Image 1 (spheres, rainbow, N blue to C red):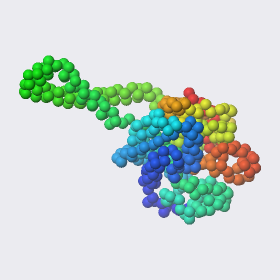
Image 2 (cartoon, rainbow, N blue to C red; image 1 turned 30 degrees about the vertical axis):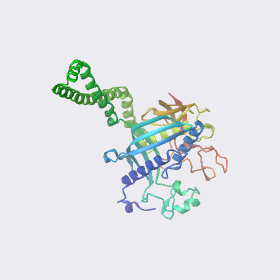
Image 3 (cartoon, one colour; image 1 turned 90 degrees about the horizontal axis):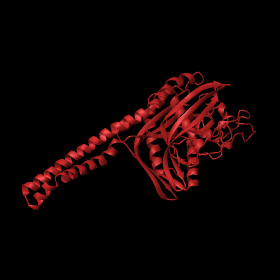
Image 4 (cartoon, helix red, strand yellow; image 1 turned 45 degrees about the vertical axis):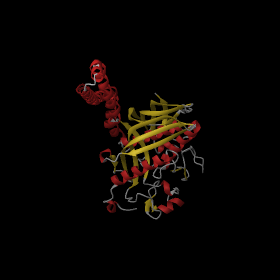
Length: 430
């Protein structure tokens, strides 16, 4: 593995931005029909579940992203370097997004708005290459043993875990979008309305003056009328812009007042939860937790068979969310309570989403709130690179894909996901 001393000049922040730009470009060109090359195995899996849902509904999604080239609208939202094995960045980029939703080839809904796209970019420490080199020095993402990339395709000589070359890091492990208010998009309709209303009101309130000037062919009178209309149009244009400004301020204030209790609660969670969690998980990050929450929410919404889903460890239940075809993060989540019980740490989470539903041929947008009771062993080690597609059996040591099975296919021992990472004990819409 490359030493950190050789890695001093490697700019992970800049590489994260490059990865996100490439990721967005591939999302745009593929429109959900395929997965970006930089997507991790877990992310590809959740996207495959979404595609299965879309196919069952006869629905499809088209994406058109226009990058905002202004550097003010792109950057690094969060970085993590204290983890012993991984370097993590969350780059963001503002885009003008046009998302179309169709049923049986017929466009039913289109969303056009400014969005910030956030992604979780992950490298192994000391890894300089932004693309995989089969002969490069590497460490096994599963056991941490030094090796080279090519050997991992055959199976790590220490733990036996096998990897596809395109599943190795660096990868985008998750991403989400948050709509942002676009003032510019709303200016033109208000200005045009003002420009039309100004002259119209002037004409209606001075009809006799206009009629007399044009009937008598009074040149000075006609010029005066034209001047009145031009002045009224200018005042109307300015008035429309002022009206938009007033409406925007009122809208923002109203939304802020409505959201204030949740925002204050969210700030308290960000302040106090890390102190609680770091007694079990020294490298705990609330931003990384958000990625897990969104990943698990996607798994629970898009999966049709919870009996085979190893990330679900609750009472038997059927999927009652099968009309949702696209999950969109609503920019806030709340941890109602957190506690330890019988060697397990629990988080009672509510995540706010802004989802797209498909019922029959009808597609509509709806704000949803999902309640997840998450738990994992207090002894589960922090592993930012954990993937459900490459786990090892604690009984026989064999590696396998645990995305849809609960038992080791080699020795039939139960795989207990909570000993490695977060699982869902309860999931419901609130």
